Length: 475
Ligand SMILES: *Cc1c(COP(=O)(O)O)cnc(C)c1O
Image 1: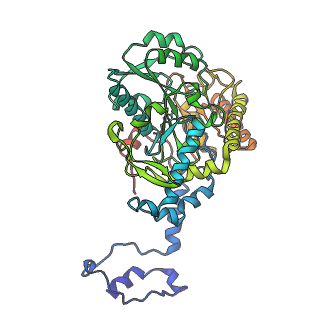
Image 2 (image 1 turned 30 degrees about the vertical axis):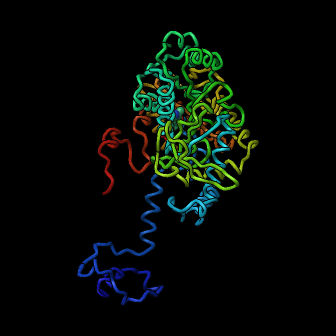
C-alpha cells in the first residue's frame, strides 16, 4: 500500500520544498487492496493549476470581456451573491430535513416569491422550474389544467413570429397546436392580425414584452381585451424583464401567467446550459394549478404544504428547484431594492439606446431608432463583397469580444442582436462600437480578412454542425 501511495507522490516536485505531512501507513479501503497502479498522472500542484487555468482562458466569460449576447442579459453578477449561496448554512442543508430545522431556507424562498409577486403584480409564484423553457412548459400546463377544470376544449396557442424558439417548442410539448402570428411592419403584434387567427379553441397567446426585436408591444391593452373577450388567456414570456422591472407590472397590463428567468434579469450567472431558474407567476384564479409543494406561513412558522392537490399540475422538479440560484436572485433583489431594480432597468434601456445611436448610420435598424434593453440590427447591404453577419461576429472574437446573438430573430435578415445590459460603462460601450464600426469598414476595404476570422483565438473557424454533433472533448 505504501508503494502505491509513494508511486502517486513520486515526481511531485513540490515535495522537495514542502515535505508531506500525511502519514504514509494509512489503511486503504479494502475495495482498493490489490490494485496495482492508479493510472493517475503524476503531476505537481502548479502543473495542474496551470493546466486548468489555461483551459479556462480559452473561453470567453463575463469576468474577462464584454458579452453583448442579445436576449441573454449577460449582466455582471456580483460576487457577494456567490458567497452568500456558498454559506454553509445553505449549502449543507438537505431537502429531507424537517421543517423546523430549515426555517431560514424556507423563509428565503417565501420572501423571494413575495418579491417576484411585487415585481410582476402576480398573486402567486412557484420557484420550481429550472429554466425559462421549463417555466413556459409549467405555465402552459397550468393553462391546460384550468381549461380542463372549466370543461372547455381549447387546443391552440398563438405565438408571434418574433418569439423565442422555446415558445412554440413548449406549447407543442404541452400538447397544443401552434398558430404563428405575423408581426406587423413595426415588428409588433397588431390587433387586426390577431383577430384574423383567433378562434374559440385558442387557449392563450404567448407574448414577449419587450419583444425579441427590443420593442415594447404598443397594443397590449387591446390585445388583452380581444383575447379575454374570447375566453382565452394571455401568457407573458418574462425572460427579458430587464427593461421593465420596477416600471411595468405584467399583471397590471392584462397578463394572466408568466415566467421570469432569474438567470438573466436577476443576475444569477448562466451560460453553458445552467443551472437556472424559471419561476412561474399566476393570477389568483390559477393558484390551485401551481406545482406542489408550496411554502406557507402559519403562526410565524414556514411550512411545506401539499395543500389540496386535486388541481395542481404536480411536481415540476425535485424538491424546490435550484436552491442556490434562488438564493443568488434573492440576494440581488434585496441588495437593489425596488428603487434599485427600476434604476437597473432604466440604465439597461439607456445603454442599449446609446449603442444603437452610435451604430444606426452604418447599419439598418428595422424596428426603428428607439429600443428597450436590446435592439436588432441588420447588416444587409452594409458589408463588403460576400461578407455576412457571421463573418462580422467571428471578427469580433479577434478583437476580444464575445459576439452578439446573430441570425435571430428569424424575421430580420442578417440580424445581429445586441444587449449591453446596465452593468457596462460608457467607456466599454464606446470601445465596442468603435470596433464594430471598424469591422464594418474593413468588410469593404479588405473583405478577405473577415472571411478568415477569427485568427487570434485558440481554434479558428469550425464546422459548426460537426462541433455541435461530434464535439472533440479531449485530445
Ligand atoms: C432565454 C429566453 C427563453 C428561454 O430561457 P431558458 O432559460 O434558456 O430556457 C425564453 N424566452 C426568451 C424571450 C428568452 O430570452
